Length: 152
Image (tube, rainbow, N blue to C red; front, side):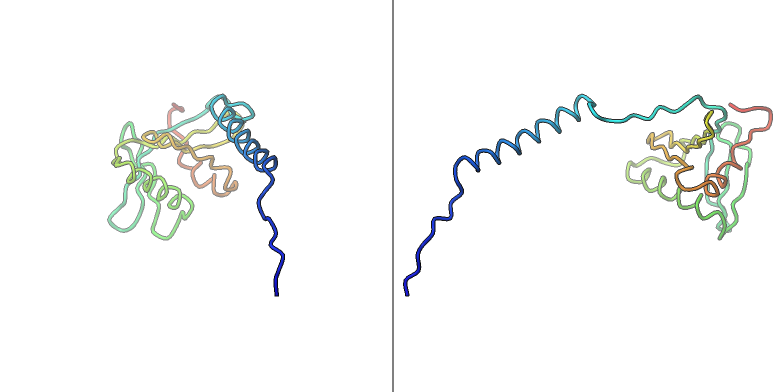
């Protein structure tokens, strides 16, 4: 019952070719990341309106929205309503907790020339494109934007 023993080593040329291919791929990826070659950058158009807002929890479970500059109450989001606004704020608050940032820095809600809306956390520079979640979700934030007496 003897079996023939086969040599199962890889040919040296194939092994060197595979190593060269992996090294080439790593060099190309590193070069692309460092130089920005092949990347797409989105530049936003001019801001038409913006407002700095602060969000605080109310005693009854409401979310109180204040203008960050004059501390005027903009809106009170009743408990069980405005789910999208609450989810976005929860995510941004989590990011702030991870970076040990308090509630003081405002969020900047902006509408651009093309109608796009973003919410920017001014402390972490994390920006959320609100239109990416659908127009009805963007409208939940849009109603917080109008500033009496003109936009910033």
